[in-house]
Amino acid sequence: MTLLSDALARERNNFDLVRLLAAAAVVYAHSFVVQSPDGHTDLVAALLGFDYSGSLGVFAFFLLSGLLVTASFDRQRSAMRFVILRTARIWPAIAVASLVAIFIIGPFLTTLPLRKYFASGLTWGNLDSFSVIMLGKPIQLPGVFETNHAPNAIYAPLWTLPIEVRYYIVVLVTGVLGLLKSPRRMLVAVLIGMVPFLVHPHLEPHVHFTLRDLANKPGGPNGYAYFPEPVFMTGMLLYALRDRIHICGWVAVALFAVYIGLRGTALAQPMFYVAFGYGVLWVGTTPLLHRFAPRNDYSFGIYIYGFATQQVVAHFWPNLDHLSALWIAAPGVFACAFVSWHCVEKPAIKWTRRRLARARKEAQDAARMDGVAVR
Image (tube, rainbow, N blue to C red; front, side, top):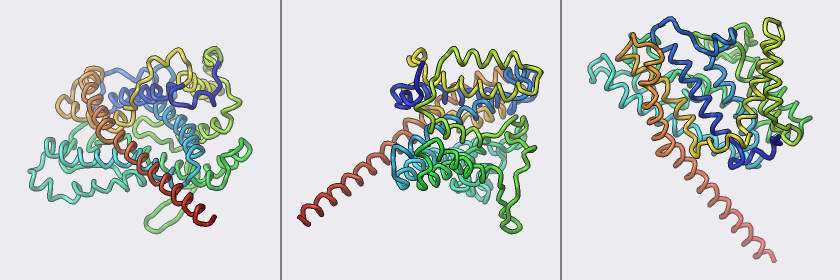
């Protein structure tokens, strides 16, 4: 049995392993999206009947994000440091992915002459990585993947980024208000977090707001059975209760057994998500799997480049069955994730942390000198 608060230190948990498995689940799910139907279905969808592997991967990401991003703000105790570190974690990877699309994927695969490709405003509009991250603007290139089974899409999974960023802002605002310091206050933070979940902003034809249609589930053509936002807020609550939550493998088994016993009833689906969330925490904290925890976090790179790599495979072999296409794409997906982590994400994070540490030291030295001068 593991206390959740004891497992939050990186060297004591397997959360990078969970993220890696979640990213792999998303790539697996997308193999059914990018290839033409071959008579097979997503294994998780076949077993559950109400959800599929891709959404479960996203839910795992959001649960851990709610937990770990809240912990990050609490650890930093600085709104500016939090914003800078969150930006460093996301923006460089997306900016480079935009350049990869424009200057590598596009020129090699566009059906247009290169002169027309590079003259197109659609091409250069993809440099606006801010809109990709904040507004969910899709990255599309002229003449690229137009005849694919999933036409035009390059980095389709990035539709979740604006949701993630909105909840970074929720953590920031509620943290500044001091609402992350106790479970009771955290309930107020979650109520605040319900606002961006339930209220949908519209920019055209004029700025106005409407209530979200909860019948319209996210997730593209397959559709999710649930929403990622409440999952993030659940992660926030888990952090608030970290000193009271014990994670035990037998409890995880028991919860899944209860779900199996409830199949065919109205309680089955909510029970599954309780069991799944607890199972994610168990995989992320059990010492039994610590030896398998990766030393590097390739999950974001897999999440970014997985779909694009699968689209390239589908471009050349559109009638390939999904499993063969997945195996062909897998080495390319991992290679892109490897390069993204070691050449973009990790250097950006290390550089940012060094700069912040230097700025903090300079501020402390200045304060010390001011104190000496006063005395």
